[in-house]
Image (cartoon, one colour):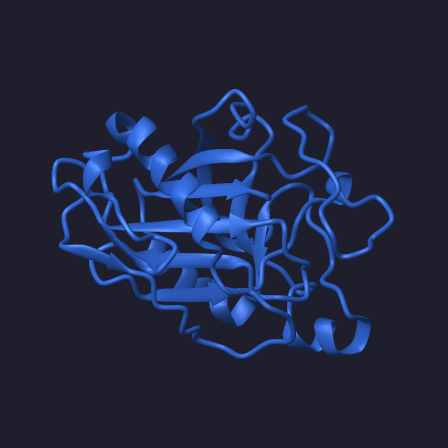
Length: 209
């Protein structure tokens, strides 16, 4: 990526080199597909870090037209999983759960990341989306961790799936979502949209401020 051409991200616009990403400009449109309690808008600083990760791992991510960013600085009650169309900057945001091991007291806030097998925690870093499959959570997507902070993701069976404990009703009734075992768990009725927009061979970036 030509870093000299990335400008005014804080103002909401970034221009990316077509050597890395096909598409003219990344206009950060904070319009969300759903209205949930909380402030789940995309943080420009988190976007910058995700773009840096995309550049770092470009040889391992064949499809770079869409990326996803999970901002675990935000409470689980808010839509903090952002699917970004790199070409036009459109952002769609969704509720996503974090792992039990990342929030032992079930506060709704991620307290720590872990890459350890058996931790039941969320891992930070860049992931490449993999194969679709049908498992105990129904249709799901495998993930491959690309960093030392999440390179056990495949062995830990960290995947994208739907879950009953992720819903607007959970937010309304309890103020927090339920917790996964480290997976990216979504509302059942949003899972199809998330999977179709992500597709295979794209990047999910997970971190917190």
